[in-house]
Length: 322
Ligand code: G4F
Image (cartoon, rainbow, N blue to C red; front, side, top):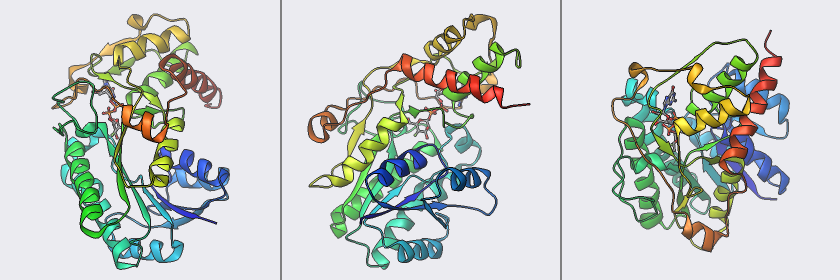
């Protein structure tokens, strides 16, 4: 039986990936940080099959421990400070966790005889930043626009470097935005679906947003974890861009979400300049043709279906809130 170690198990992608791997017969270890994480308690109730281990990407000795304990065939590094806005307020912490953290994990693998372990780094379209071309592929230069993007570029290059220097099977999956009902409320898609549902149910009146002209290539997280797994089953360690190739603005998302609940978004959305970022990534759109042809990966959920899935879920969420 293969075993996999997933860091960031309490995030959006961790449980989707764990479910996929458990369904394939893997022994799954999930790494969580901290002592009283409410999402961890929920995870342990809903996914008792996941062996939860405690470690922190800023604590190298804790990484040694989890690698020794799990002896993984595959490591998926999904842990990070992943909220771009937060990274502007905490640039050094972001560099420590999101940038140096993956390097500590790669070193821990080397130190603990895990150089035959296959390693997946959650790289991101944020690395393209102020992109020099559209759509963006594996050949597009990185021009990050946030402390988060800068940290991810470092981690991506470290992953490539360990592959080249130590012949490790280490890959960076350059995933474009991927969403789901499990998305954190701080990210714009879930913020919109949660508020649209709350407004429909008479529980909220408005939603305050920042730059609604920003454009993103949004896909469904459940599709994207399949790509992570496929990358580690490949014959060679190769980095892939993963996205739908279709771009929408935040305004489009707002319009679709409010129309799902039969409301006019203009009556409820307040655009605030102080919600805008110091530097913005204006347009992301994936050219995932390499993944399509070599991994045979394809997204199964389109934009409208994704919006509807999230709004429908949040209508249920509000029913559980007293
Ligand atoms: O949902 P967001 O916060 O996601 P962002 O910044 O694109 O980053 C996400 O995707 C990346 C992949 O490219 C990941 F690496 C990263 O970890 C994260 O998952 O914001 C999307 C867009 C931005 O342009 C932002 O300025 O929405 C705009 N926006 C407008 N109003 C807002 C808001 N974003 C948030 N979070 N909240 C707002 O009120």
